[in-house]
Length: 621
Ligand SMILES: *[C@@H]1O[C@H](CO)[C@@H](O)[C@H](O)[C@H]1NC(C)=O
Ligand SMILES: *[C@@H]1O[C@H](CO)[C@@H](O)[C@H](O)[C@H]1NC(C)=O
Image 1 (cartoon, rainbow, N blue to C red):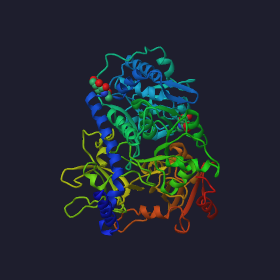
Image 2: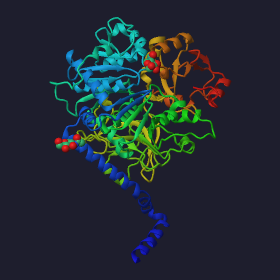
Image 3: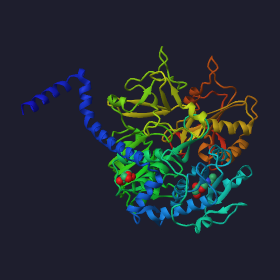
Image 4: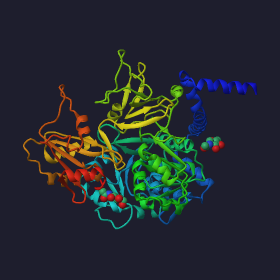
């Protein structure tokens, strides 16, 4: 009793004394840190069992099939798929490709809409060691070709809805075997996939090369923050690590039912959501394409108590929801990325979801963070004291170039609390949590690695993202540096758009960047084009951009100018361009600004009226 009173008095005294800030911080964060530590220990325990047992995604799934063959794995429209059904389907896929001589290390592209068979296909291929390249279904022309090339695909499985895109590049992929998933075959030489596997044995394939957890499972394409899209290598370990991270840190259980409307070729939908099903035995409801007006009713229909989101989804859900009406839904937890602090509280007040697990991470990176205590706006935390155990650190960088700033000894400098900088994570190869498995392209891999950061010889993964950490260790996402921007939930590589514009218009100079639009997630594309002779054909440019780029990558604004703004040392003032954006008052008189009207598929001159309408949200972008 005496000691209790004494410690309360002591604590009160210390807390009232501003100089003892650290005690206050400890008192505020200890429960949180203990909870996180406990979940982290469980997570690591599970990973070490997997390592010991040499568990692969397929072997872990097979174990679930034995335990719960008749449990529902997928809901999809009005279909139900049990664990056993998906296992048998994937065995047929494996047996077919094995019989055709496919072997470990080969790769096959998959260009198909969300559906249960999507998972069955890559799972089946993984059983014989064939790597599946998951391809964004929005792609056409060069970007599509580029992905097939970097992943070295020898075959492509495509859906009927995407046969036009495949037809468009047919001449350049004559050496690939083409499989159309289902439906009338429109392309010469294409084989019907469903027919091909229909009579294959449903037993697991035998006499196959040994598959280890370190082997490649799939490629997921990412724009990262540099250069053209790259094929991120997803090993079995990496896949399972992503799933276990979410499972343990968001405290899920096998009884949960998960709603996933996100595309299966991205990490969030294809790895996190599906991983919960195939590695942890949850039921997952899939949707072919996200729809804001069906989100909650789907969750209701399938009884989903957990769902996922990206920032855009949250905004769309708020937009279609009539203020004042109550939404009935069973969702208790939402897991995702990109919910902005500005709408977070409104979202909670409107939809009453008990837990929002906002996370930060990238497909290929080693810096993963997740919010486990509903701190509004945060993407997670690492207590400053725990940095020794989990080396995810914000370092000082040049505001213009986003290059790390080094001290007189050549090392990087850690930011103070509340000081924005670039997030980096220490690479420890062989440790699933901290390794960087890189890209299919070694040179691209090299570019993302920082050397000699805090010590001679150490290696860090450079996320290229600007974050800030507060006194309590919470991280907040600020911005993305580098040469990509995010629009409509997709990362766009500026160099890719620049390449298309230069090709199309034989222009001297083009620079592409993202600009902010009030009330929209991410940044809209804008292209500044040098054209002093004033002979650019805008209508032609619009038509060509539409033919060569997915819709989200087409610049929403053009800025036609006489010369590029340069610094005295001939560096492009991209940041100035970005800050001026499409603001007619900020842009010089002699510059012309155009706005892409997606209904007309044309660029129209940006007038004061159109500008205003975009700013107040009257024109939807
Ligand atoms: C690992 O292997 C052991 C022994 O073979 C087995 O009892 C255990 O269930 C396995 N654990 C996992 C998670 O696969
Ligand atoms: C590919 O198919 C999906 C699913 O039906 C569709 O949403 C998408 O627009 C198609 N892509 C192209 C480039 O036609």
